Image 1: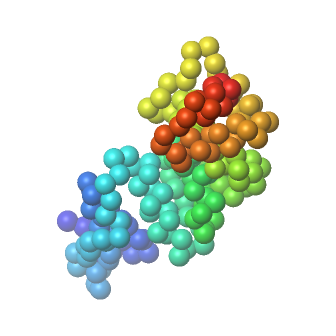
Image 2 (image 1 turned 90 degrees about the vertical axis):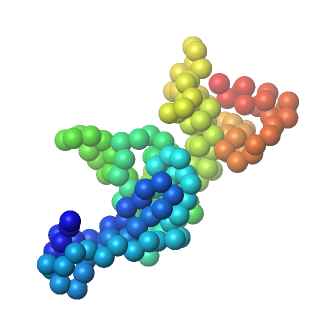
Image 3 (image 1 turned 180 degrees about the vertical axis):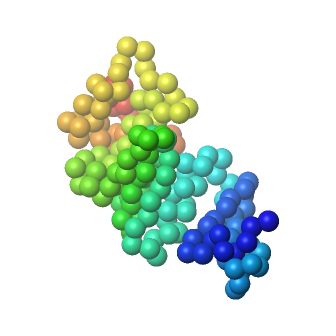
Length: 177
């Protein structure tokens, strides 16, 4: 059992399965905490990666939002969605004593909005948690194509948003490898 004194100054949300709860300090320090269900956070996301973005979007009433994860998928999602989340996003990544905080706005400015929109398609196509990269092709060579070829940027952007593709699209996506 947790006492309210341990939560002073914190805003804590806990998710389990499709439910989310807000844990608040009670009126007195020695009282038990208050737990409230948060229906707007109810979701059926299988991965915590996408659920973090739901919470980051909700936290936009604050000027700065920090998302902590060692996962590249979360980094890619943050870059993509930082274009639509109206708060200053930061990404705390790394493990143990090798952590760092990345300013997502700065990275978006360096890459450009169009390339950030293409990152989900790029990451899925070239290798992520659930997809291996192509044999004989490095992610670096595909990255260089993304940086310098506007057609590849448009193709990879649609890869992240469309569900069915024609033969012409297949030729374009093959050219990005």
